[in-house]
Length: 91
Image 1 (cartoon, one colour):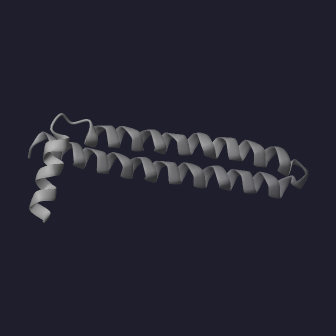
Image 2 (cartoon, one colour):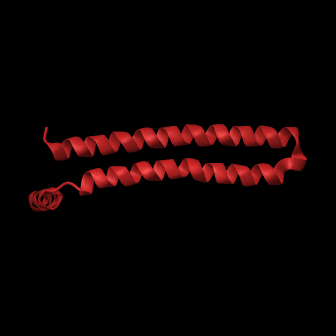
Image 3 (cartoon, rainbow, N blue to C red):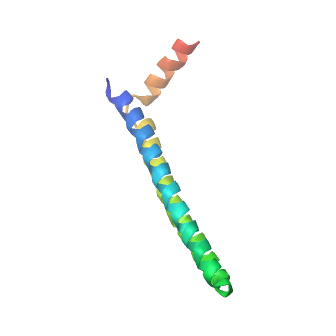
């Protein structure tokens, strides 16, 4: 296995783990917000604002993982040559 293949595998696994973790975190956050609003409906405005800010922070972690995965794939010194070779073989 060459370096480029290892980078592609690492990027795929990393974004999968990040998406799984962010999904779990967002579900737990939403669960807590809904339970809080159910117990005290008057606080729904503050809970909703805090929830949206928290969800944005959690989602940014997944976006950072995506950026790192794309850097792993496309910042390889031979990436352009490998992509040209794959495109030529695909024709």
